[in-house]
Amino acid sequence: MLKYSRTLFESYPAYRVPHFRERRFFPEMLYSVLDDIHNHSSSLINISLGGASFEDRRICHIQIGSGPTQVLLWSQMHGDEPTATMAICDILRYFTVTHGESATQRILSSLKLHFIPMVNPDGAFRFQRRNAQNIDINRDALALQTPEARFLKELQSNIKPHFGFNLHDQELSTVGNTNVISAMSLLAPACDHEISDNLVRTRAKHLAATFNQILQEYIPGRVTKYDDSYEARAFGDNMQKWGTSTLLIESGHDTNEPEKESIRKLNFVGIISALFSVATDEYMTSDSGGYEELPLNGKRAYDVIIRNVTIEQSGKPKTVADLAVSYQVDTHSELPPKLVDAGDLYPFVGLKEIDATGKTISPDVLHINEPFDWEKYF
Image (cartoon, rainbow, N blue to C red):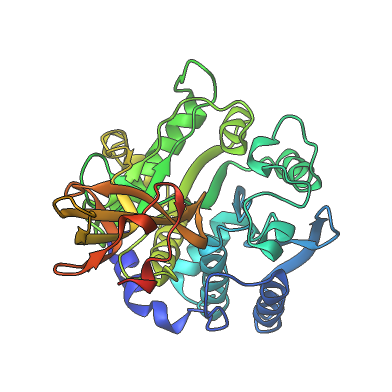
């Protein structure tokens, strides 16, 4: 499996869909990409209208493979979390190009794959977390007040997937209490308040351990996990409860990479490798302790840290401090950015860091949790 993942990693540029030039794109772009992949798939891929959003945008259901094991992969429940959506398109292109190769044939003869690349097209249109009803679809698994949630629940009930891949982007996080930025985060969600381990969740933990083993080859020490407290309204927890062994995969960040291309590539490599491990049953040989022992997500990162700024105090001694700036709202950037901290920030890390030694600024423009046009001064 690791040898196969290395081949995927090295050959990725040949399968990367070039149409996505930035992370923010409209649903129509996705529809166009899927149509293009379908037209070159030699009928390998079936694309159907799975459902419709609150504003009647298409929710595409893509099927590929003929195996007995059903696998459901869904992305962009939150409209501002598109990294895995782009990776799904890369994966579909890979399968269509390599369908004659032995590894692809093993996957597609063992598994039947169901992809929902954009569950929330209305949110994607606005590049916002929630749908057009202003509801978080990932907290609507029980109430089912959104058409998007009803579609996803109905699909799960109809195909009864053995495995589920719940694909998201995560907020800016660190590896535990370190200042290392988390590149990917995993979770085998709980299926009850007792956080018990039944067979369904145990399989998910083995899958998580497999995924972690793959990632450690490329981002050693930069994989984290989420707290597994039970969230009764969430789809991941309920998929586990409904009998689908579910792995949450959250795309993290890398420094000086706002479009998250390396993280997209990790999704491509990790998901295909994990599917291969399910097709071969190799995932069950992974020690679940490799997942259990992952550090939790930490909160020691900001979008921008400006180091060693001299703050001029009228009639008082000058102050030297670091300034922390945040663009992050949920999982994406919004303008204007805010000043969120000032002082000694040595334990923290910035996606972007600036050394402002020798530069001065007036305290009159520094207000915590207020907009801060830092580029005007540095």
